[in-house]
Amino acid sequence: MASVIAVDQGNPPQGVVDRVASVLASGGVVVLPTDSVYGIACAALPGNPGHARIFDVKRRERSQTLPWFVADEGDLDRYGREVPAWAHRLARRLWPGALTIVVRASDAVPPEYAQDGEGGATIALRVPDSELCRRVVRSLGVPLAQTSANTHGAPSATSGAAVEEGIVDAVDLVLDAGPAPVGVASTIVDATGPAPQVLREGAVSAADVARLAR
Image 1: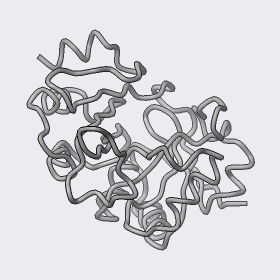
Image 2: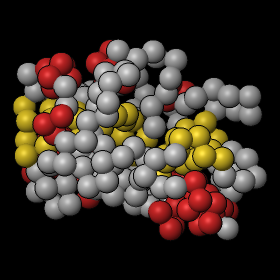
Image 3: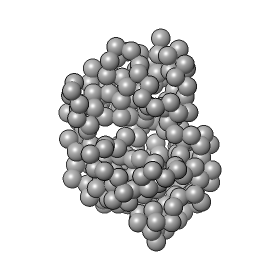
Image 4: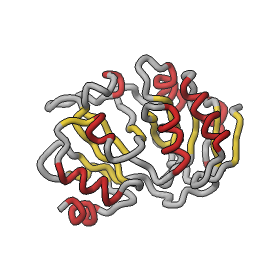
């Protein structure tokens, strides 16, 4: 069973950040609290064995890709290409927060993390409203490839106590910050076209997406 550490995700001790970053940098897999739901993450490094482990832990098909947690709006252009101005407006207004933006992947995205598509590969990016997650990303120097901490088809965990025992047994470290503040999955917006297309409506309404993108 993984070690479980209680933490305040809004004000995490540096020692906890360093430990999480160390586990991830060595190919580990960690359960982290976020503003929306709990996530299971690895470092988005080429050839990282933690990447495949996440799919095994979740019992999820590897044909699906994992969204990335990044540190700030500037990462839209670092890991995306041809990012429309309206996507930057959404990021400035809703990041950090429960909004995931899908963009065309730049050459900085290792192929195994990108989703193939007709118009080219894409990557889904989010800056979570979690000081813990953002500090871990900055400490690692690479994004976190992550997904909700539940087996495929099961409800998303909205608290540390709700993370399935099988997942706790299978990962290397669990950070427990109690209930997630939002408790609803992020809204996913496709930014590969001329206007926002909501792929999944979650914590941010489709109406707010349309309004704030203008």
